[in-house]
Image 1 (cartoon, each protein chain N blue to C red):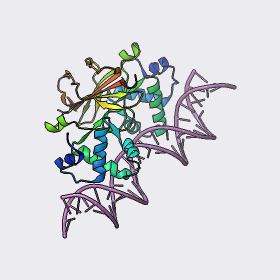
Image 2: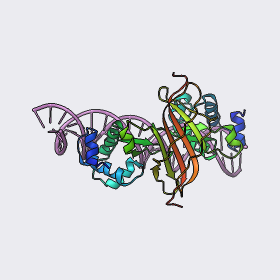
Image 3: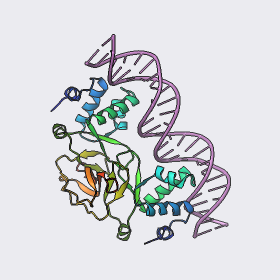
Image 4: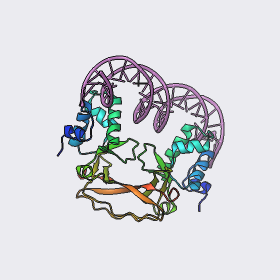
Amino acid sequence: MATPLQILQSHRLRITDCRLVIIQEFLDKNVALSHADLEDTLNNKFDRVTIYRTLKTFLEKDLIHKVLDDSGATKYAFCSHGEEAHGHNHEHVHFKCEKCEETICLEDISLPAIPLPKGFEKKEMNLLVQGICEKCH
Amino acid sequence: MATPLQILQSHRLRITDCRLVIIQEFLDKNVALSHADLEDTLNNKFDRVTIYRTLKTFLEKDLIHKVLDDSGATKYAFCSHGEEAHGHNHEHVHFKCEKCEETICLEDISLPAIPLPKGFEKKEMNLLVQGICEKCH
DNA sequence: GTTTATGCAAATTCTTTGCAATACT
DNA sequence: AGTATTGCAAAGAATTTGCATAAAC
């Protein structure tokens, strides 16, 4: 289990407070987080803009990935360690609870192959399941 | 095949130019459209706000549904006729092309059941496949 | 010392709200 | 006539950009 420091180092990113704290957040909460979520939690410790730029950098370095959401807010989740290991796993299954609004990655669930029409080439698949989560039942 | 007029009537919505034209757009282009897409096509024929409100109304009446997208823009697609017939089909498969950026509904493809962990209850499923579409190959 | 990240201000874009005028039934 | 929809103005989110300061390497 890598630490925030190790994660930054292995991605050749400069070590800064903001980056360390945001990675820690993703590791602690195991849910998808939006910019607003982070801003709330970090409670003005860092500038709004810095958080945006940190997320952008992490996205570019494949440290986090976008999580689909129909609420309009862009959410991000930490890329799991399996993904880091062998390049990238472009199959994501997420579950969003309609009550608590939390989105979690269902990492153990693998997506079956989808038979695409002729001429279509798949690069990435994202499945979003919405419903009621275990905690809210 | 229902006309825009018939569609509005069957949903007990008032017949207005903006609504007719937007439904026609959805029927013509068979792709998911964002507010900006509509604004561009309708080229200032209707106010920005009116388009927002029309989309909201159509969403509430289940005439259109949100299409997941990781670009930040909210996209909408017309609900197919099958859906209208028996309430609502909450399983959507969409394909988004990374080149032309178009998103189409793959209506014929059905989603396999996903085995969720205990305590999770599924209400809706959305699969977004990204890659290269037939036209862009 | 050089490069990169941060904070602040401000600009853009996206979306919603209030209200009077207009169109629909 | 009565109710719902539209357009305009303006407010409110969400996100991006520029630039000087500060921190990382």
